[in-house]
Image (cartoon, rainbow, N blue to C red; front, side, top):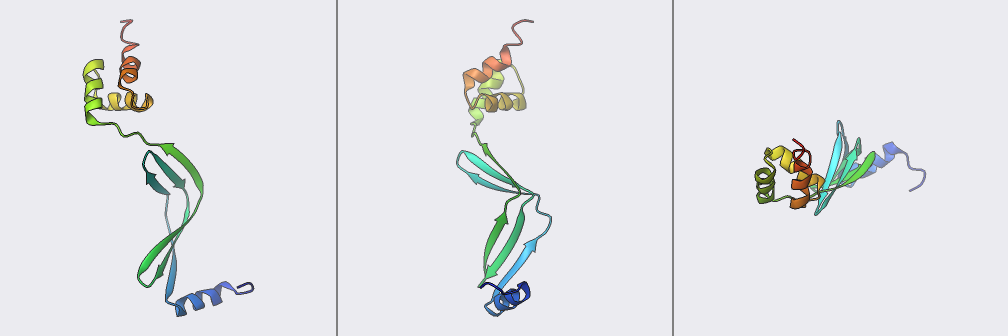
Amino acid sequence: MMGINPRQMKRLMRQMGIKMEELDGVDEVIIRMKGKEIVIKEPSVAVMIVKGEKTYQIAPGIEETREVIDIPDEDVELVMEQAGVDRETALKALKEASGDIAEAIILLTEGKEGN
């Protein structure tokens, strides 16, 4: 299809029942998978509608992959109790310790022992 201009392409797509539109104002797209997330910041996103089915096309901006750790509530409560901290502090320590309860407790209590 070399040599076809964008206007002709749009007309051809319309004749085939294909509608395509650009999504404005997209800040980021997050793809969540087991154990990690792919975050695409400032992407260009287009929606193509063919016979009522939507397909999203994402042209990446800045892409980063980050690990996601699922931490059970029981673990958070145990760290809270053992280290004498609030939920947010316990959760932060568990994330920093990759979910390791003992390491999280040690992280939180190391500084307290000198008091």
